[in-house]
Length: 448
Image (tube, rainbow, N blue to C red; front, side, top):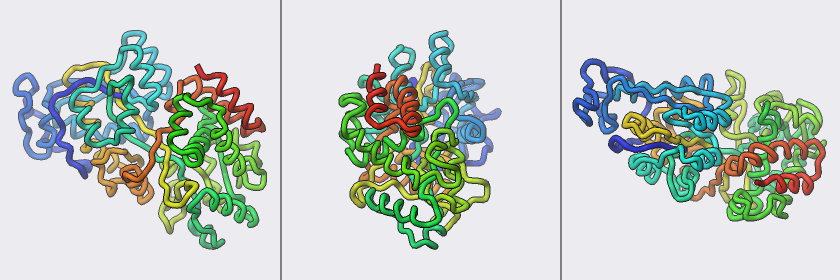
């Protein structure tokens, strides 16, 4: 989701961390009307190309809340000091619905942080979003792969660059429990099946799983399916499935879902520390992995962002309380991952709005935000060392590795009625006893 236009290209310096907020605008900073492009001194020099503004305000609307919203505001604090732009962020759990209401009511934000490319595309279809300005387009080409650029592109027009990212398909486990039992991290899906069977013979349940997420219940199940479609059927079939060039209930999709079912619908394999298979549908995804810590379950499938769900004091490291490996492929050493991210789209082309949008597409911003902790970005100008943990550093390296086959979360790319509708509810029906073919056929029939 993207923006408007530009006020000078950013400098593109990698490795920038959060800097001291000193001597930036104040009485010495000229307004853009007085001397645009004047170079501030000291720490503000790297922001000179964005321009300087007196009393300008840019409002940004998105889904990011609570502590993450505080870090977001901190990530652009020096940019505000040095440019004179007040970036006012509003977070909402109702963004997906309210962004359409605000657009239709003629009251859109200056910038929207879209959590799904599909939503970006639907809003772009109204004509309300503006084409990405020159600076954003240049940053997108420099710092993101063609795939990531395409996720912010609708009918050949780039509307913006990505913001943050996540790597999905991690399997969280306790290194000490694995070591005590002689269990090795699997390198193929077959080995993962074998490991699951071995764990089931011990006094530990192999998997703990939760599909619960309030009104969004079911989405963790879609992540399982997407991971397995990509790994068992390959990226071409994955793309065809997401674009509905093949039916949702195609044999390749049924095969992937059945293979997931072999693990998480088997009463001997789930739901460690929680209950039986029936508890998966109602167990909150954020709490579902916690039995890993007390050894009542061995593994939990969830994205890189799950690091933030472990209790305070939990050490996330290869020799710590918890660690994670990527769901492997059918062959060893075949890196294929699904993931997600946000995109910034603009409803205004005012110079200060363009400046903010361009900054958010830069390597400087990516390094500033990631250094504050808890998130990663697919921006190639990001220094992995700025990530706040070894796990997140490895996730950045996965995204930056040219050998990685990356695909965006499929449900986020599908029409909302499916991706955030029947696909979610279908996973609840399936885990609650529905058979694979009937569930997939129902989702197929719902495709608009």
